[in-house]
Amino acid sequence: MIINNIADQVASPEAIRAAKLSARYENWAAADILRDAIEHEFIGSIALSSSFGADSAVMLHLVSQINSDLPVIFLDTDRHFFQTLQYRDQLAKILGLTNLINLKADKAEEQDFDPKGNLWKLAPDACCALRKVRPLNRITDDYTAWITGRKRHQAATRANMPIVEWDGRNFKVNPLANWTADDIADYIETHALPAHPLVEQGYPSIGCFTCTKPVEVGEDARAGRWAGQDKTECGIHKPIFGGDGI
Ligand code: SF4
Image (cartoon, rainbow, N blue to C red; front, side, top):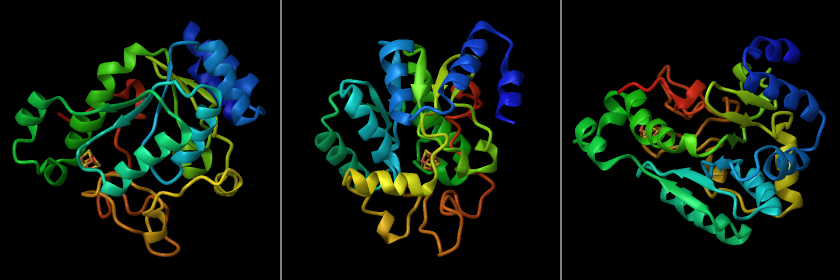
């Protein structure tokens, strides 16, 4: 199934490169994939985008063991829980991350598109575009490849996700694609990584405070994100980080 997906992508030299890398990395450990991507394949032109959410400590720790100067991009929407901002600073300090980049919405665009600060309620896709997709688009060409923490088990749409993707503009490297929820929990315990403080309050997936609720026992982990709406993703993992609603 994964091979079919890869074959579907083959249309350009970059897609062929992504397919070959995916095949080579498929049975590698996440740390080995990361090391090869950072120190060999995309040297000097690869960054990690992190939400500093419930699972983020794993990828941040793995990266810190290889290159603590690697750019770590945080999309600062000005609507994060204060616990997330504290957790971001705590993890950066503990892991010795020296290149944390806080990306915010353009002030003029914010004034134009969300003068009253209620776009999240009126048009959440446009709000995510303003505060996440467009800021990321401004720097996406600065890097050839982006590391993500996405996992195949998280959603049906991610079930066949290759280890390396070509989205038409950047490579995306998904070293944790094969990891299960138990793998994540084991890694956090083994390395004594601090948990996001909201996890124990019923938030297994954490975004902006305006759009995230705790979930009930037995509910899907992402059920608290944009609860009651059709929206399930912020849009940064769409091809070319695009399709914004502004
Ligand atoms: S998650 Fe909500 S508040 Fe945050 S950027 Fe998206 S719509 Fe806006």
